[in-house]
Structure formats: structure tokens, C-alpha cells
Image 1 (tube, rainbow, N blue to C red):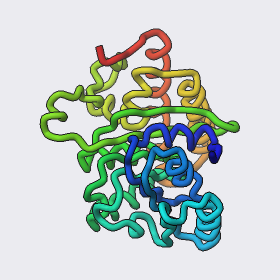
Image 2 (image 1 turned 180 degrees about the vertical axis):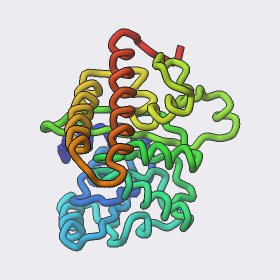
Image 3 (image 1 turned 30 degrees about the vertical axis):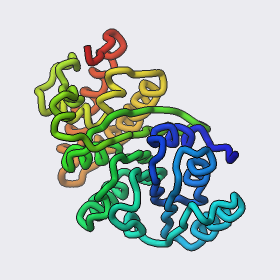
Amino acid sequence: MLKLSSRLQNIAQYVTEGSRVADIGSDHALLPVYLVQSGKSPSAIAGELNTGPLLAARKQVAAAGLSAKIEVRQGNGLAVLQPGEADTVTIAGMGGSLMKDILEEGFQAGKLEGVRELVLQPNIGEELVRQWLVQRGWHLAEELIMEEDGKIYELLHAVRLSPDQIKETPDIYDAGFLQVNAAAPSKQRLLLKMGPYLLRKPNAVFFKKWKSELAKLERVTAQLALAEQPGAEEKLQQFKSEMDAIQEVLQCLQTDKPSFS
């Protein structure tokens, strides 16, 4: 059995048993090979744009003896997928802006027809992915923040819900639990930025990430304070407001224990 990194193992755990998987940007096809080897997925598609990783993926699949169950395809994003071919789409290890564009292009082209769940791991720009999920009617079912080899990752698990399920499901973007001095739209933006589940159950990695983000913002504001370009003062105030909001959230979470109850 192929051994995965903790990051890929956590992605694999979100895949529903019995799902046909399309792994976009599959690199060496480690995730599809593991899912089929373990019996969790009956078949998989590994999509890769670049020739080097594509050849590595084909070699990995062949070495595992799974060429009949895993198809390695070259193409850009969800272009490798035909409607109805997959139940689950996984995309990991790229920026949130690129991931959002891949999802939107796939949506526009009908590539997500029949797909019931998305397992997404953006390296940065997680809020862009959450915004896309909201705009396109995907329910964010779970989130995870983790650290491996000194890097922090966020995993998002989204599913399609029926109208009846939507009625019965709590609104995860209801920011009433967030006891900060901000208007409702600002609280909503904080949930998109920091994660509605992660904010409700923050762990040590969550606090580590956002303290690091504050440190980055402090460096940016110090540079902007010395800048003389047009608009620098406005940007400086925007970053300071963002820092104040994040600091208030962290202080709130260190004293409260928000939940869905």
C-alpha cells in the first residue's frame, strides 16, 4: 500500500467511500493510486497539465498495476474531465485564485455535472475558494487546518445538497457567534477569510497561522508608512483595519468557545 503524507492522507479521508475520483493537478498521482489501492475508490482520473509530472503519474500508476482503473490524462484543469465521469473532484497544492478559476471554468463548461463533492486544498487564498463555493451553491461541510514539515494547510470539503437538505442544514456563515465589534457584512468577510468551522473550533495551528499573518501585515504596513506613492495612505489604513479585525477575533477566540449549539 502506498504511503501518503499527512496532507494527502487527510484529503483522502474526506473522499466518500465508493466515489469515482478526478484528481486535478495530480502531480505523481499519489492520491488516486492510494484511493484505488485502498479500495475506497473503484476508479480514478489523474489530470496533469505539465509533461514531466504527467509521465511521473503514468509511471506511478503502471508500477502499482492500476492502469486499468486509473486513467492519466493531460490537460488544463477540469478540461480532462467529461460530465458524469466523476463523483468526487480533488484539487490540492495550488493557489486559491488559480483553483477558483479552474472550478469556474469547469462549471461554465459543464464539467462538474454529476460531481457530488469537492475536496480542495489551496496553498493560499482560501477565502477566494470559499467565496466561489458560496456563489455556486456548494455547501462547505468540513474544514481542517494542519501543519506538516513547517507548512500550514487548510482543507475544504464541499458537497451538493438537495433543497430539503439545505433547509435542514445550519447556516455555517451565520456570524452571530463571533463576538467582535463589527457589522454583519464585516463578520461575514471574516468567516470567509478565516474559515467558518475553523473559527468555531480553533486549534493551535489556527492561532499559529493567524499570528504569522499578523506579523506579515505588520511588515507591510511598516513599508507602506514610508511610501510616498499615490494611494499608499489608503492602503495603509485598509491593512491596519484588517489587522485590528484579526487581532480582535483572536482575542475573542482565546476566551470563548464558539459552536453550532
